[in-house]
Length: 132
Image (tube, rainbow, N blue to C red):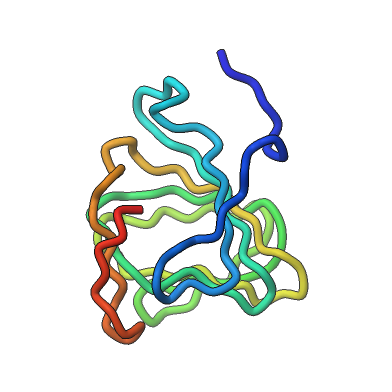
């Protein structure tokens, strides 16, 4: 068993083209002994957003704090604490903070996603293998 507080884990900027005001903490991953899933916590500053992108694996999101929206292609879905999101493989998506305080959410991805290509959609200006 591994138990630790989120604040003890280093927070790093999301280093992808098209990201603005995003930070991530890797809470649990294969290196911690997780056999199937990795858990990350994202924090998006007011006015910030993740890149608009897609990838060949699913992920699940649970909103902890703040207000925002998730784009599914060009369709906007509002987000508030307690909301859950399933992003299916290859869905074009983006998370945006529409509030006045940080938008925080948990994101679970399969460990098998490590090293897979993330493609930033053309309207962000790039096709970028980011491996995130």
